[in-house]
Amino acid sequence: MALFGNRRDVNLFTTVNRELLRYIISQEVGYYKYKLNDTISNLYGEAAQTRYFTDPVLINCLISKVDQAWASMEYGPDVDHTLTVNFLREDLQDINLYPEVGDAFNYLDNYFEVDTVTDNQFVVGKDFEHAYSSDLTTFGRNFSITVTAHLIPSDKLGLSKERT
Image (tube, rainbow, N blue to C red; front, side, top):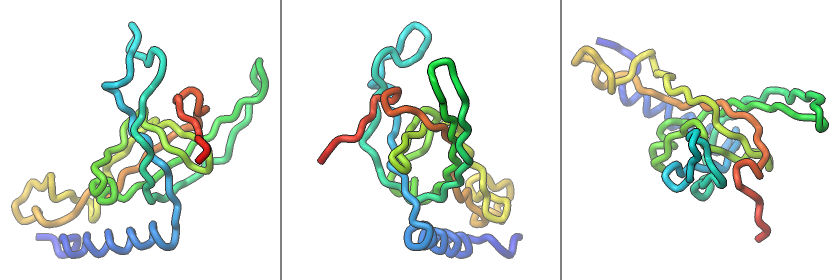
């Protein structure tokens, strides 16, 4: 039987991380969930005309930035910019949102499209939902969700800022 990583320990980790994300780090993204059923696809399974998204939801997160890479293209300069964004899993569960490839988010007035979703950061290396032993059903937790995304022009997403 494990000594550390029970639900009480995991709740402490969650509470401390929520406070860090909300009150100290204070990074947020406006997350747009892709509406696959509303988007019309062409013969190749690509969005034929317009992609549809839900209204944005503000989510606290931890963002790791990579420097922008500039390239000279045939029609002028092009920029490549990627971000890694870490979400607290319980924050996403509270708003009933799970990131998927193709979703988008707004950060610093730029739009990013999700490329990968990683969902395997376990507290003490365990997840109680997948315990093989009955002694470990209250130990560990799948703690965070990590997303990598690339910069994309807003017109390719069909999103634009509106004046209010």
